[in-house]
Image (spheres, rainbow, N blue to C red):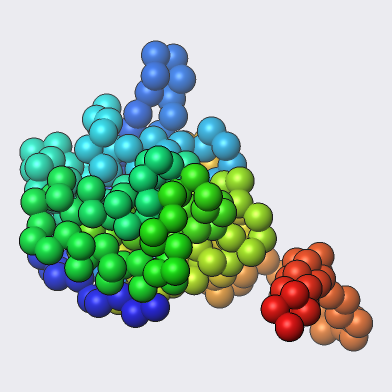
Length: 265
């Protein structure tokens, strides 16, 4: 799967956030959130449920107004230039927003037509190939696995080639194989030039994907850096000989893969 580089509409960081505050009555959800996301990178906003991750994404995607602070996406202010921001982004929520009655190809064509793009069929076929869904393109989405639905959802978000993509908990509820499929799709996006802001509560997901990781806790960014920089916050590890045992994920993938090969033969 190879995704072409997107057109960058502004210089500087793709996302620039300073002093974001948001409260719901007496509940203060965000407390002065600051961070920046470099273009063409994957930035993980890591935190437990209720930490404020989705609130940040909703503010950056112009679905919610902050009580204080500023945010710019692709060089545009999320309040005063909201229309420009919406044209520069795509948003994939926690659950796949696909029409199960339609086929995968029909879902893609529908979005392309809504965006008033030329040759929607060509666009749909191209995305089906890139996301390894060509053979399933004529099938109704109701027959798709969780990983296939999520890949289709991400493909739909790419129509129009937005330079910035928000993925809010993209692997929630997926099995190990489907999670790995989505991880590969996200890596391909960044390699093609798309800036990805990923929210997750899974530590391994942030570790696998992110160029930089920010930990959001009780409405504040408490640390922000590369994985290497974050590991340096802890004391140096002692060098000891430990026999490495396979993880449950290693066992699962090995067994499932071997079963699949036997079945194919």
